[in-house]
Length: 258
Ligand code: DAK
Image (spheres, rainbow, N blue to C red):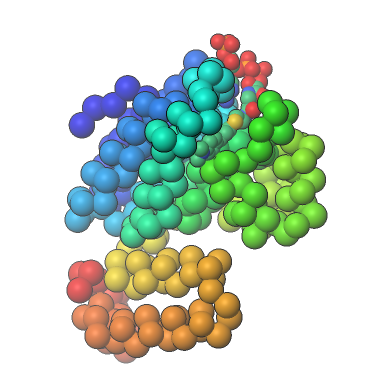
């Protein structure tokens, strides 16, 4: 499938999506959002794909929603068109692991998109922020909730109310990205991490992702119960038997996703 605002390609077990609107610093236009949804759907149904990488360019992962497109929208248009919601919805329930390869500007809806992914690899040049306040609005794609859960109330208030951006090292110290690497290496590192994840049992990866995400929605004791149910369920998988057998036989496991 070919797209106008991004490219999607397969590299072995990896599905790679590269956002490509350089003229607008990869701002999320309606078209881009719909193309992203369709690329995600195609990789979801491709059984060979075990992990995704979403990236942008060295200058910008994404500078947020396309302000030029949004400027004239009415509140009714925004809510009736379901502007953006289908993307957050799909990402929120996406069963395969997704690694974000971040560089340059990761702003507004771009940061909200990143925060919906599973592992974030950032180039040392990455700048993250929720600058919506500067244009008279506020985060609308989960920023007030996900950023606050990631960095705590006081840093989130600072970023959201002043629009101040933070750099990669500060983001890592706050737990907002997983790893920071030199700017030449961020995409390779993301692919390396994705390849590592792709080598694990797809069944345990899927359930482990589900369990971690539930930590944001459940209280501790319900979350622990949920984790335990999934853990028991994994004992019904062939992959779990294979993993433990391979350990005892001192060989590499061959996971089949069964
Ligand atoms: N939208 C459209 N165009 C953008 C853009 C954006 N967000 N960001 C940059 N561009 C365009 C610029 O207009 C410029 O194009 P020309 O004017 O030259 O044609 C080109 O990209 C290069 O940008 P600059 O010339 O400004 O480059 P600089 O290096 O000087 O500055 C910058 C880079 C990233 C600091 C600056 O461009 C900037 O401040 N951009 C805006 C960042 C921003 O405010 N982002 C938040 C947007 S609001 C929703 C969910 C989510 C959202 C909305 C609804 N629902 C679920 C309903 C999300 C909202 C947002 O993200």
